[in-house]
Length: 265
Image 1 (spheres, rainbow, N blue to C red):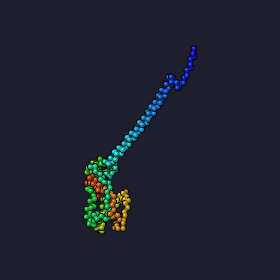
Image 2: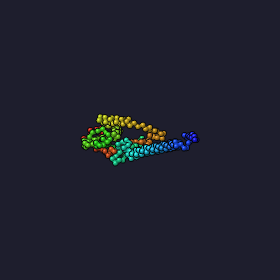
Image 3: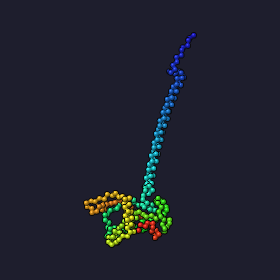
Image 4: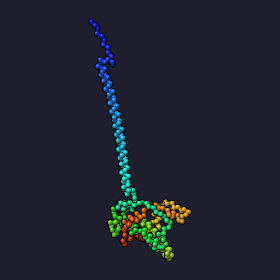
């Protein structure tokens, strides 16, 4: 009777062992699993980068749109965004230039004409109807954020104001008038009321000159007869102020005399 031969078993290389086949399949599965995991990880990374670029694009687009809208508003609504003097705007929505260029003359023949009658025409022409006194409705007072002024005796719905620039011109005109009278008539004697009125005007002009201190450096070239003659100055728009004052002019009545007692042109 033959003895049975011992079975040679190699758990790794024995092809007849079903366990070896299972282990190989497991390794293949693990390899596929790692490959799938790497693929999903790379896909997620690509998706993250894509969304990051998309988000950055939309944020940049919103920023550009906001800048464009703000620029358009500044161009189409300058009055709402820029603090302009009230007299540069009119009810029709027109906006006048804030600054204008004027030529400075040390002597202006029109206003310094020694023919007093001729010069007087130009001086009178500086004052609009009403001599710088205006009447404003309550809505206008509120819109301009003004201190409430005295009411008109003629129209209680309006408040009365005096435009400072024309008060200053009135004071200058008062000084000019006295100088002319003294020049034409050496015997002319100033009354006490006229004296105090004139001294009031002198101090009004002093305060305004100091308040609006002009730092312009006036040159004097060798060929110039007078300092600064013919120089170009940048000035506030006096014509626009005159137009606004005309549009709101108030023709005073005898009962209004005490509103601005010193403002007599």
